[in-house]
Image (cartoon, rainbow, N blue to C red; front, top):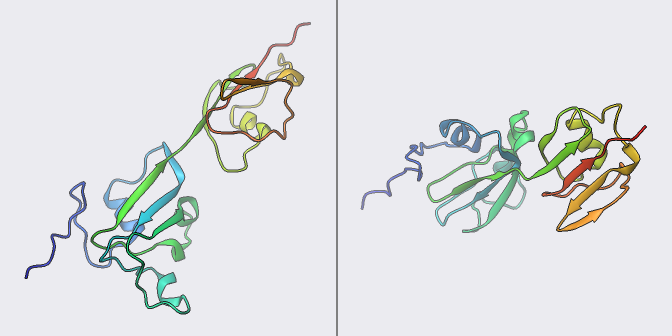
Amino acid sequence: QPPEDPEARDGQPLAPGMTLLKALANAGGVSDDAAGDVLVTHGRTSAKTGPSAADAPGTDGEDDPGASERIDLKKLQSGDLSLDVGIRNGDTVFVLQAQYAYVDGEVGKIGRYPVEKGMTLQQLLSLAGGVTQDAAAGKISIERNGKTLKNVKLSEPIMPGDSVKVPQRFF
């Protein structure tokens, strides 16, 4: 019986020895809207072949069918090859989309910015170029889920979908 056609949904050939990095490169890389994580769901014929699989104690290299792995894309792209898992026929790779917060008002660059896990208001404002000299920094508000948080501290955690308003101070 002939083997299953080793081809990804987007038409990219799935060569033997395919890894996550190779698959992402073959697909043209990730977009600017990519989040910091990639989700790999292993199919019924999948086996983990990355360097970490062979070294893991108590494993025979086989994944549970349907098991998923969340891979830190930034660490992988920075050279942590232990995260470069093998990709086999039947696997699905999801490049998660970044989630954003919005900044408006007296900042260097008004716009949307990707929200990282654990991000604070201070970090978000830094991405937006900081507050201007005309900003009323003590009166920053955040619109979150239809509610307004007023006079928030710089240590306030930022959530996806937050809309930050930095008002102008009056002289």
